[in-house]
Image (cartoon, rainbow, N blue to C red):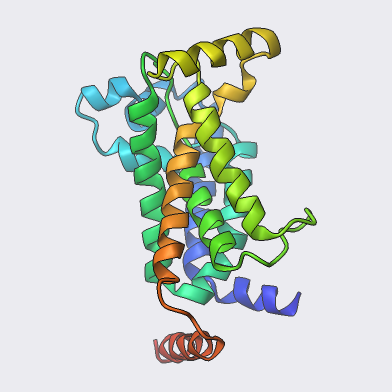
Length: 238
């Protein structure tokens, strides 16, 4: 518990990023929520239509908007607690790379798999999945509270399930899988396909790939400690 608290207290980037998301959502809620700000979401959220109109910045800005306070709090908790650990392990630059990589690649997968859908994607879940898969790949034997399951298995489950659900989306361009997804939604409801599975998979793929790249050479405990000492010394002087 003490180590976790210390990691949180030292993680300035994670705190600032999550607070920014909360401030933006608070402003939206004060103006009546996403329904009252539909134009804002259509302009800065990610959709095939916005992309065709040249709103290329939406590939990044969509991640700063959320559908509700519950949505932003769920993503924020993942980004803060997982981000704090990775910020202490890897440093702020690598954490920023994961944030941006997860949102951009997650957005690209969404655009590729949107098909005829006119849905607007919002939320930082692509970045959250990138952090989650990076952590579970770097530390596969640790436990993911509250599940009594090894982190590596959790990460693999997230990656595979997101891939399957991405292809089963009724609006996906792969007709055979889309028909299966449509049959599932007609029988059990379409709530499961209202989630950005393509974004989740793209972000998760970034986190998994980056962690595998880091592990291309064995990382020793002494090396991790030395990296931490250097970061703490640099922060003290700054």
